[in-house]
Length: 233
Image 1: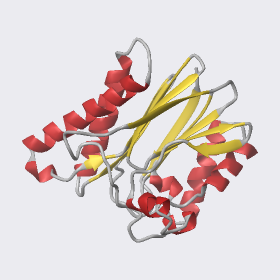
Image 2: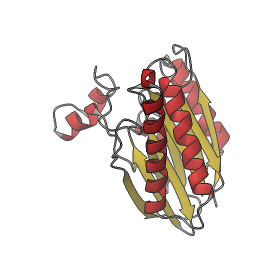
Image 3: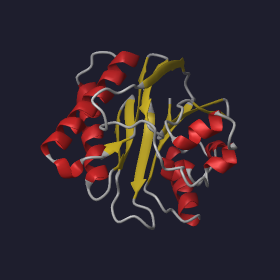
Image 4: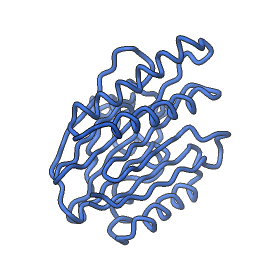
């Protein structure tokens, strides 16, 4: 099992919160919508609701089941856009995890992230599907430059944009005491991995960790919606 707590806030600039999340025992997910007025909010809500419904029906978890849940969400959003052309261009990120026995399964699209912390060391598990990630991987910009690059908000892959969707997935062994973080780029656009690791090492209380991270984002301007889940296995 996993004890988790999540928080989602609108930030100091946006007019609406386009982030969504859910926690259901060993399963949790985060989505971050895009697509202009109302579109991003609709896409992220469709995605998180569809993923939750799909996984509640599952008798067990593996990578394929998580990928299928995201693809089902993708189909729902694509169909909604066909019915309402004004929503063309909307989409969302999605990162979802499920823990069964001592295995953490994950699936991801977009730039919302999964981190796992073992023995005080934080590791980013997912890879961002973003323009700046591609520039970083090509050696054209540094990790620090990713935070301020003018194309940092451009995704190369999102749920709900195309009928065919590639979903990243994986699995890793976890142990009691390991911790996870799921978050949108509203956190990682302001707080670097070292700072997240430092906060988690300073407190074993997940509620305190979430609030500390959220406060740091707000202290730095919080120009985007911010969603954070912290869980302990």
